[in-house]
Length: 74
Image (cartoon, rainbow, N blue to C red; front, side, top):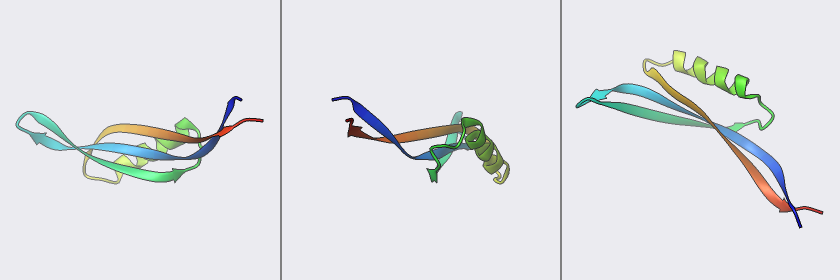
C-alpha cells in the first residue's frame, strides 16, 4: 500500500546574530510552532522579517519546518 501524507502544523525558526566573540559569529535561535500548513512560503518569510525588525539583534536566517503524518493509503 502507498503512504499518504496528512499535513500537520509547521514551525518557523529564526536565527538572530547577537554578536561576535573571538572572531566567530554568535547566534540565538527562536522557534514559533503551530504555523498553518496552508500558509505560503512568502507569508511565513514576511512574518520572519517582521520579527527581526522587533529585536535589537541582526537577522540571521529564516527556516520553515513542515511536518506530515504518514498513514497507509486505501
